[in-house]
Image (tube, rainbow, N blue to C red; front, side):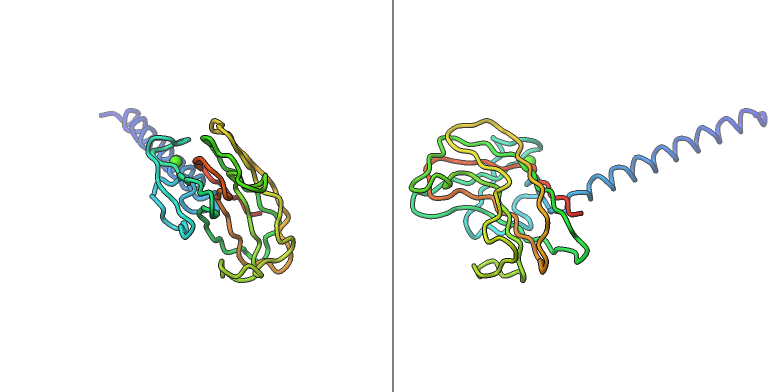
Length: 189
Ligand SMILES: [Ca+2]
């Protein structure tokens, strides 16, 4: 084999390896850009706090194989949450996610529908209702009621001073019907 051919083969191998490394780096970066863990429910309910109820649905999903299904109850709030540690230097947070609803009809107040919400907290104690900084009830990321197809909701917030933890809530207030949530995405800046 001549020297020219060997050089060509070396160049080919180099390009092949280089392309491989770039691909791995890109996928590594994109898979780590969501500051929420398992926002698409592809790892079941991993990292989600399901003390208000969280079901996995493999039939109705926005992407992948699974979504979070929350059947509403007429007597109590239902939902799931995830806590994120907030870096000291963080200033802004962008939260987005997809909601689908079937016959969600509020019982009582009009805001008893399907919502993606946020709470800025001092500590990670979810059960302490006094555990918040800034506004007690910041505007929700998005809400849906009646019967609606998959739609993306998104909101940007300034992170209030003294915030150490951020709680992301997927919830249904007292209502009838069913809500689905998928591809919840958080970017802390
Ligand atoms: Ca999914």
